Length: 104
Image 1 (cartoon, rainbow, N blue to C red):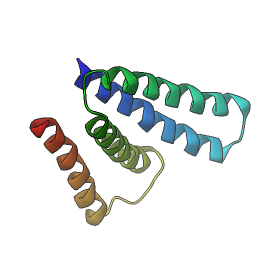
Image 2 (cartoon, rainbow, N blue to C red):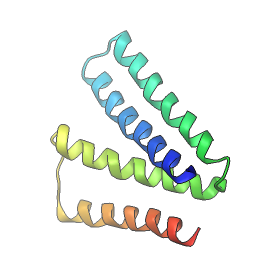
Image 3 (cartoon, rainbow, N blue to C red):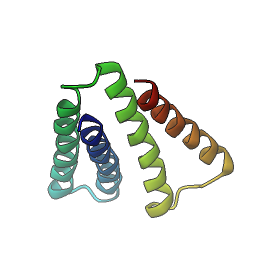
Image 4 (cartoon, one colour):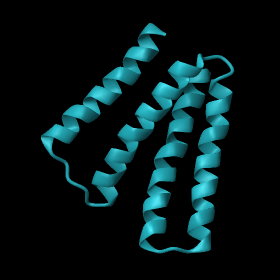
């Protein structure tokens, strides 16, 4: 169940980053609250995952999946570039997170 919590926590980071991008576009109190809510959600589930997983593995997978998700969110919703170089290194991040899961 800890790995499920960790994936859910990564969604908190992904949507937190998207919330920051939305806040930068239009600075309002509700958007600031959305940032706090999404990151709070992510931290809560990260803490649940860390009950059973080592801190280093939890943090590496959380940030890796969060970074990969943020890149994909940027490409799909914020019109960021999707070059082959970005896709290659995105694959490296995902491979590293999967490797930690398989070897942990």
